[in-house]
Length: 127
Image (tube, rainbow, N blue to C red; front, side):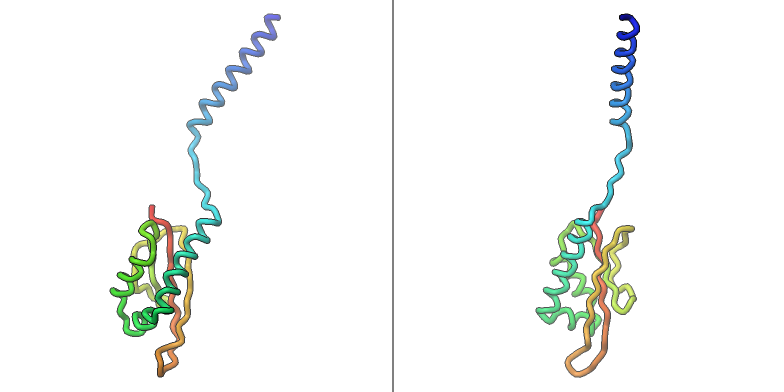
């Protein structure tokens, strides 16, 4: 009977020590795919609002990046940061992150000229 009690005591001790050690394990967060979808959705919505109001084409072809930045600040939530690239040149730089999502958009030109331009909005969650 003494042998069983010592075995039960050892099992209880192991369970208690394991429970304490698990509490001190570092937790690593794994980004979910929903984070990516949310970011892309926010970026696409902002681009489409600017496109359908005609402001996007004006800002890009007049190189009015300050007004573009101001307008994007109003359209994109405060917890999302962004950079803007036009033809692979960064025109609005707000830092960076390892987990960026990129949303490309193509403009064909102004009313009278064909001048294809690629606008890319990179978005990520602020830390």
